[in-house]
Image 1 (tube, rainbow, N blue to C red):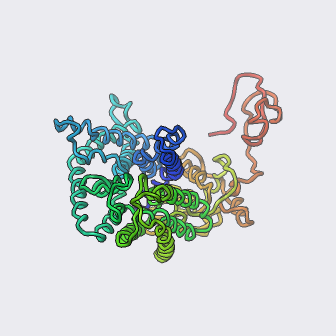
Image 2 (image 1 turned 180 degrees about the vertical axis):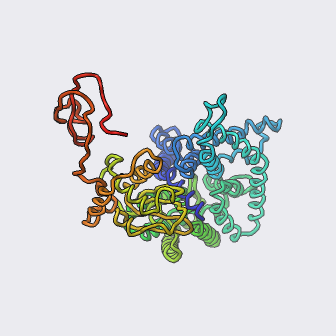
Image 3 (image 1 turned 60 degrees about the horizontal axis):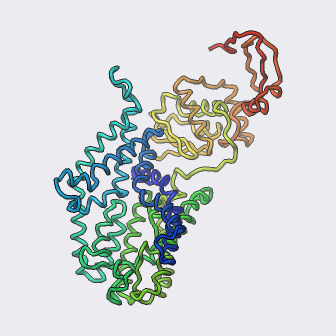
Length: 560
């Protein structure tokens, strides 16, 4: 479960850009459809702008996962994820598969036309993250020294991607073809089959295999062509549209209800953060019918909720198939398609869709809210990565937090007791050799808002949004780059916190600490305000004086 929660957090980075992309694409689609002109420049502009991101969602996932799943990531891990994606998708393109199999490109299995999906993107991202963690510090022989360390990561990622491509070359057509055959079987089950299709459609989205089922029901793979017949108005009234109708209630009403439930159950201090993702995603789902931003926001953080969502979708599809209600779409089950399809000759009682949608809004809201609170699910705004307090102070120089870092290290049993050190938005996350050495009272005195012990050797110290600077200071002290702060400075910090100035945002050093320095250079002292550089003259770099040198010799101002 911890792996999937971490994966869910990794997806939040690419998911954050999708709601705006979905809305832009929807506006473009509406303009093109309403004007009946596929060459309308305004419509093409908006649709292309949104499609640039939506069409490349798997690539965004590959990069986002490679960053989010790596330990202490930098651009190298993102590059590794990108390399993996390019290797896999290029090798398994229809053109290359035809070459490998010695057949015409038109004869290539349809499965390879649906390979560029989020599941493959996530796999490539995981390869990139693993390659980075495992090989970023690898040392090679002198002859190959240029490729040592981070330069080796993308190379390893490419090699592993060859293996993944080989596996998918044989496995992917079997999985895709099996689902197409299963979809053809579902056709014989009537409304129950419609519900089963809706359930599997949502359930297969993380694997990217929902396209296999869609091809059976929406297009002419098995003679149904539900989508095409509805748009052409050439289907059978009362039948055509049954494999699309139930999606409208879920996309326009159900998922926004789920978003509201996740918002109201978010921790009060993080509701504004959660609202940014949830409400924009809900707008995209309602107006355009693009649900991925919202679904991926909780899919891996709370898999049980996603399973419930898939079940609700199946029930909605089955009920719609039983009732005399039919509607279809050209893009997805959103408000725009509902309005455009209202006058379609294949549409049957479209007025019932909003009424059914209100019911599903209430069902989603009540069910999600109860389950989230009952089982303490880590949905957006409740997950640890969103936790903590929001401080308003700007970050100062790294040395400002040296006293806090020194006090924390002492309270955690010393640097040797820390086996792994990370941070999220507001807290330190550590693995300790001996958890019993943690002095929670000392951590509190040094500015921590609280301490959590999730289990095992894990310890989390809640500090605030400036935690990154404390963590950096701790790492410098642990590595020997910086020396621990004098004990009197640590005591001064604790006295500040006791007076109410702590909690992760107070200045970590005393303002009046006296440090004796030897004269570094012969010359004349000049007030800092007279330095012809606004960065120093305005005190941006801190207080001090300037010296106008009399010669070219500069000495170290302090020993060490």
